[in-house]
Length: 124
Image (cartoon, rainbow, N blue to C red):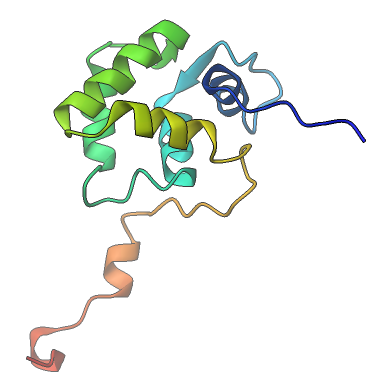
């Protein structure tokens, strides 16, 4: 049996960059795919790190897709802004598995209303 190659961050970038689209070559990544990657790694939890945080950092580049070098700057910016341990974040992103190996729920704005309760029905 052949041994599996250890995962690398740039290899993960390539896989998530071309995820769900056969026409993409994996040299760039969109905000959606980057957020999906962060969610699969359980870094984007909508508490410490939110989609707003990643969107603000991504839009500093004024592009719809980032290449490897730009994405590394983006990751460093997020870690500094949110006071995250960059080395641990990089390790988590590297070891979270290939796209789709674990279920990822991308929240929709409508989900908020599924849990809505009128004031008179809330228990205090």
